[in-house]
Length: 92
Image 1 (spheres, rainbow, N blue to C red):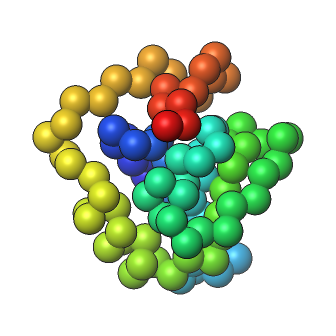
Image 2 (image 1 turned 90 degrees about the horizontal axis):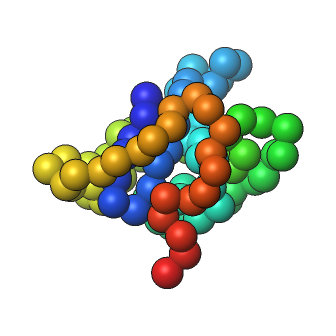
């Protein structure tokens, strides 16, 4: 699942070995922490989504975005699976 917000662009997928765990991924530093402030984010330069956090309980993941995202706010992203050229949400 992709989450687009005014604060971040995230991808959330189910952990392949642990069915109750989701992996939250982002291409840009800081995006995961903007939605999940207590997340421990790891960086892997070999992955298409360079930043990720694992082992978030599924219930927690399902609740946090609803408190952090305004579904009516317009958000534009020029890419999905292509390499990003710049961070659409630079650090503020």
